[in-house]
Length: 545
Image (cartoon, rainbow, N blue to C red; front, side, top):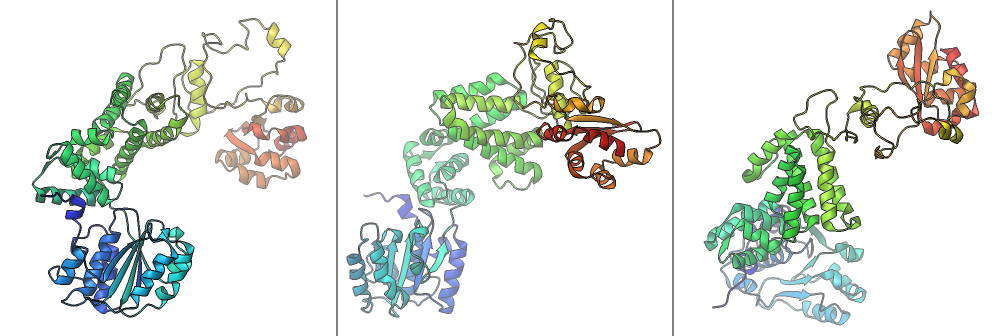
């Protein structure tokens, strides 16, 4: 006895059994009920989403012996003949192999004749975008004004290649990809009807591998049944598909929570030993992080009851900010894989970045602290707010991270000769016991060292940069201090009588701090040319203050 594959055996025979295309079913059902039938339909969508299936159901609805309606009986001679692909008035034509103008002319010559057995002649042209330009032109007139007994159904996976003159003559329906949850539910019904033992977790892997195509899911289900000797087991499905199992992904999350670098590298080693795809691993990891992040903001968003409790546990243990950062690292790591020496190296470095970069509250205890950093090495810090640069500088210098950016006093400009003559223990040496070679190169771009401009306005043009200016005021100017203390620096600029380049310089400055005696401003190094153009600008600003 011949075996019929599941994709053909379980092809829907009516609109009620069709899965995942409710918007198309609703429109066609209403049209059949009211008799408002178009003469040409265009179904678009990826492979295996139901274009041919809907075409056959529509043909049965039009030619059922019990009358035109959205629910064909499926028992009459016309319905049975259409299901068996032997109905003379339902013609399926493959445009990929019959794409010429002669093939189209032969089809149109037969269309003028009345139906042989049914009520309508239905012509279904699959992959219609493969027709030549002359074939499209040949069908335009008939497609616009066909005989009363003719219905055209066009199907394509690439509607952009169809001429607009054809699109304007058709009623177009875009068939959606199948959601994974719908695929899993449909596979469960089929396996229960076929009396095949299965594990629900295995069906989730099949639904993801199908990528929205129900026919692909059924084909993979056939393969999984054969691979498992009549059973569907998760580990067997993972081995068959060559995908990264959930055990690897959860092992990565557990290692990140425990700050265990050896466990992270062990996951990469196990994947390499099984020849698993590192790109697919990063893709699955990013998808898992996204689901956990959604649960942190909406606990009822996860529809998969099997994994819901486990994902909720991770959602409560991970920091929200870290999950957002981890998601970005995962997707960027996937993009960087082609640039890595090999897939293993790129995947391992991505895992190490996930371990190295984690937000920590300044001055607070974190439940997920990084392992102790060896003395003499820079510790990666992801400080929040405006203290990130100061904290990073403090970590490199070996001191505690500063909670706010402090202005640096004026420093004389050193020449190459002065640096060569300076003793090893001079004041210019960095405040650290380690040598210059031991200081790692920071991954960020350092700001130039700040210079006190108020000390000597003439030196501002010759210094490397002048990002900070400290300006002292008189004793009685408390209104300016209060306005500056509130952070309204730009309002203060508008109140001062500044103009030209002086006003331009003031607008590019940033208010660092203010008290009763002085106002400290910072100028970005990219705008230091404003000081060189007008050396007396700081004096004018100080005079106005």
